[in-house]
Image (cartoon, rainbow, N blue to C red; front, side, top):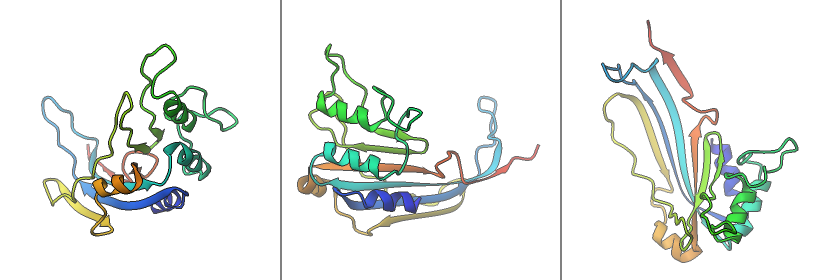
Length: 193
C-alpha cells in the first residue's frame, strides 16, 4: 500500500498534502433474525486516504498518473489501452473535462473518477455539471465495539487544510486504497460451524 502511495506521490504535478492509514481487526456481527451471521469470526483490513494538491491542470496530470503504472484504471483492451468511452479510465476523464461533463446531445456524463479494484482517484470539479469536492478524512476513530486491534496514523501530524490547499493549488485530488488491492481483508478467521 505504501508503495502505491509513493508511486502516486512521485507523479509530476501532484503535491502530497496528507495520508491517513487505518489498520484494524474486528469481530463481525453474530447475526440475528434479519441479518445472517458474517462468515468470519475475525476480519482485518487496512485502508488509506491520501490527498494531493494538483499543480497546473488536472488534464495535464491525468496522463502522468496513467504513465506511473499504479494500476489499470477502468476497463482495458487486450493491448492494455483504455476501452473507448468507458467510465473509470484516463481517456474518459480527459473527455469529461474536454466536453465539460456533457455528451454532444446535452445529456450528463458519469463522473470521471479513476477506478481499479481496491483503488479510486477523484478530484475537485467545481463548476462542472456533476460537481465534486474532495472531503477531509475523518479523524482517527476511538476504540469502539468489536475492535480487537486498531492503528490509525495521519501524516504529517498537522496537515495543510484542504481550504488552504485549494487556495494554493486550485484542485485537490484524493486517492483511496482499500487493501490489499485484492479486496476484502488481508486476514480473516472463519467462523466455526
